[in-house]
Length: 165
Image 1 (cartoon, rainbow, N blue to C red):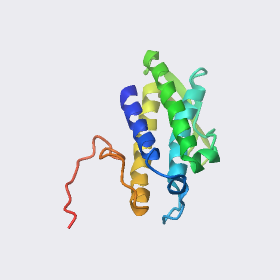
Image 2: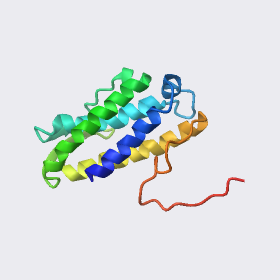
Image 3: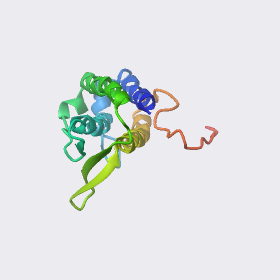
């Protein structure tokens, strides 16, 4: 699991290494007017919350840092990716079936639920893939090439070959 998460996060680094700060922070694409940087920061904030709560076995997903600099500067985004990636090895020695308390605001106030650590990591990984898929639309609208064919695809999603004529 940890290897798959790392591989997927490295796809984000690959994208950031191929775009400018202007492309990264561009908010011109309808309908949400969100930037690549904003999506990337959000993805990484979720993982950051996981690491922040590991010692106490209490993760608060509503306590995201939302560092705006990470949304605007590709190098800051890359640094944030590298910080999260460098924390992944510590998970190898942990019991992924261990219960942890997870807090989040689902729109009606704070909800507290028990998860396994592995379950939370699966959720964070799937969340990242989901945002990468949303980014695929923004990337396409900005005329940027998607970094690789796996970017934004859940491994369980059937592939449909489409003719581009």
